[in-house]
Amino acid sequence: MLKNEKTPLIRLGLRPNRRSVCLQLSLAPLMALAWPAAGKTSGNAHVTEISDGIFAHHGHVELQTEANRGDISNNGFIVGDEAVAVVDTGGSYQTGLALREAVKQATNKPIKYVINTHMHPDHVLGDAAFLPDNPQFVGHAKLARALGARSARYLEAAREAMGEAAFAGTEIVMPTLEVSEPTELDLGNRKIVLEPQPTAHTDNDLVVRDRKTGTAFLGDLIFSVHVPALDGSIVGWTIVLEKFGTEAPALVVPGHGPVAMQWPEASQPIQRYLGKLASDVRAIIKRGGTIKEAIETAGESERGKWKLFDEFHRRNVTAAFAELEWE
Amino acid sequence: MKLNGMTKQWGVLLFAGLLAIGVSATAGSTAAIAGEDEELWQSIRDDVFQAGKPIVDNSDKLVLDAPYRAEDAAVVPISITIPADVAPHVRKLTLIVEKNPAPVVATFKFGKAAGLGERKISTRIRVDMYSNVRAVAELDDGSLQMQTKFVKAAGGCSAPALKDMDAALANIGKMKIKSFDDKAASSKLTSEAQVMVRHPNYSGMQMNQLTGLYIPAKYVEHIEVKKGDTLVFDMEGGISLSENPNIRFTYSAAVNGPISVVARDTDGKTFSGSVVVSGS
Image 1 (cartoon, rainbow over the protein chains, first blue to last red):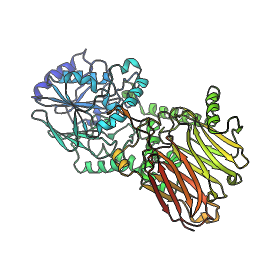
Image 2: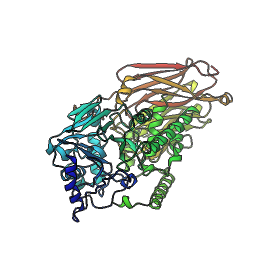
Image 3: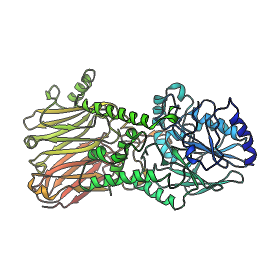
Image 4: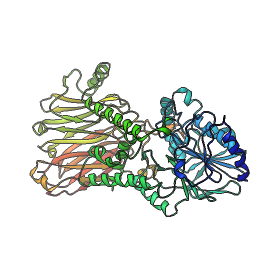
């Protein structure tokens, strides 16, 4: 049972030479989860038990660098009586390896599933670290096509950004289990539901919802602190978030930002951002303005409310304009 | 793990720093990169234009507007403005991205319905690596007038097309023509409109790793725009035009009739549309 597994974890976490496992057993001080204690990420990944049997790792809100080795997105795992499902694996073989070590410290149950919430390299490039476990690699039915069109580029960019040493071992693993409709997986006395989404953040977003605790890994459907990155459809994304609110999960793991948040606090800022971006761009289109004007002005009121704004915002405007001008 | 300890002030400083970089980058944007690129340009210009024919660079006969740093290398907005006193003398306009695998982005030939006022053409292009972008106007006196901008962007030609692959393929060939004709325009010589064509404009450099094959090139190679029966421009395009080709242009407000557009892709498929604009 899960309770039995916690005991050794706490011990491990408290051992002075084991600084990498940080535990948070209570749900109450959620804000405290936002920024787990600092420490090195060599060895195993910092994970926080955000809910009964659900562990999440906080990735840096940064672009990938040699120093962070692609550890720039949140990921985690769900432990059942018989099996473990890993959700996302970070941006390099090494982040995957660190997460795998964290799983091994938390439980001796086998890793049966490695689920990718979408195609982006900061979420999938650690997959190869789990190949020895021979799990099912699970993704949205459109994940394989999306990765197929991008993998060479993703790998090249990751190698360039992180350098050869941090990149070593990184490869793309194609999904072995493709999900095109809501699908239940049984981890042993624990069922999780995979919910493929229509085009939103990307055209292959997959939500992982734990029935037992009502916790949902939303991947990059939720950005917090880190400015959103639009690589799908601004209209679709807005609708998906609205619909999600009608069946709001008890606890949310965003793709970037704090490892655990509650609805609607998790969704309000990104809904505000997407709403502002869409309304500004639509207004410019309506009065016959150009994409260049939009890039320079749309959504500028969001500046200062997000990290990495300059790295992503203008590209988001470009994408939003190219989409909304067809309305 | 600096991030965990990152304070608000630190973040503000970081943003200020990035802003400063942005500002200084913009200040340098008029300068084109010379030197080693000169040889490449010589070979391209001799291929595209009459070999050895002089080209006036930094010409005051046209203005090229391009971002120094492009946000999305596959969708780089470019625009060319030709002042009213020059516009009636322009026969042809060629847009070149020097370091793209197919450097000529598009060639525009203008007709009578291009009008006598200030002429403007805007489109979106792919930039494969940091490169000079050049606009060359051929005037009726035979002279070649050029403006050059350096654009920092990379990977635009091999970037995967279509954020939503299914939606885009389902709508292929769909055309939208927008008129920006406003009331105030009645006093002007030209009005503005935009043509948009849904098309992946496959560059031939985008790979499908599932099959290990490159997706064959397939792109919009010709767009003809008329006002009534009179030509505004016809354009020959290549793989350096962005997916969903998009051209914003000026046309004569004095010529009657609807704006009609016929586009043709490399498979020989044609797409057409027309729109009635006010005053016609």
